[in-house]
Image 1 (tube, rainbow, N blue to C red):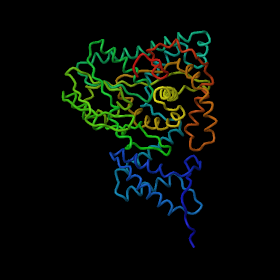
Image 2 (cartoon, rainbow, N blue to C red):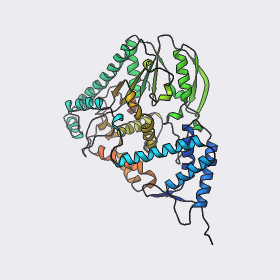
Image 3 (cartoon, rainbow, N blue to C red):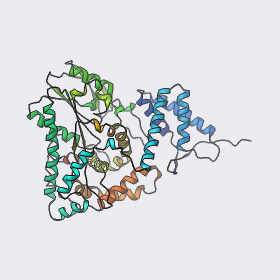
Image 4 (tube, rainbow, N blue to C red):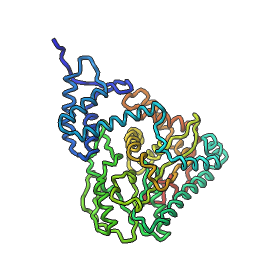
Length: 450
């Protein structure tokens, strides 16, 4: 007699860890794939997930704990059998892409050469060596000599020089330009950079028309969520890309458009809200994570665009001989900014960061090579500041996540940043950091409205 099959309670991850089974992970995986091809029906994703669970329970032998791969196989089968071929293809492609990344990490090659701005990195490294800031040890020595204010001044000067160079390049092309895009991953400093660049361009006599693409978010209820209830604002598909493209094309053609308004308090989009028209010589200015994502500006000729990419390309070796990771710098920046300006707990920022990185690797990093210019926003002096502000948090998180199989990503990041900050001399007196510093965007005290 066949033994009765029961409810699935656990699943085996690729790492071998056994974790509680959660149907929401299946629902969100299906919904994400649907969003990638233009679908927004979450209730349908939930019904399809129910089918996956039913098949899983029918086919799983008693005592067997299904693996992630086995569940994904069933998801593909259900999507295809229900006539959702395009969604199935998006799901398969995403699954294949994740597999390739795991293989690349195993070969220690997470970035391909095309994604690394080597020339810019060499310039930054040369500057770091020249200023004796290419290792944490050298940074500490300069701080110990009372040179923190000098480090701030030197770092800010290099960053401002980068923005000036970008402004001069834009002025040289201003006759044919209609769109300037400031893009880059989360917490790279786009807001301050956009303001500084705007001031320079205005003084050069250029007329700018800012356009906030944040108003083009879909309603919150249409965003995918994970099993912890986090909404994913990091994917470009969270924005109405087709409408952004349409409005840009019409604005450049001299037409009036009515841009939407997104209410972040309610999570609702109000269509046709604000009239907007560009004057003949106006250059539209966009500050966006996904400004270089092709679908956002597909209808505009490349000759009419200037794309500026910004990231903290800090070239400094830590105590382990490895270069400080740029994503770790941005994580710390975002923790401080979100805690100060968005009432968002620092720990939640850490736990959400896997979404941020996944979207960056898929939708931002691959387009670096299309940038007209790259600005380095890495500031050596931010490490002593973050050491004083955040070290005790990371110290606690390392222990909290050490044996939590559901928070492996958070543990690995917390452990790495904790190890880095342990080697940095803290600076608690931030008075040497001027109000126009990019770092003020994140730690507070900026003279700019951010």
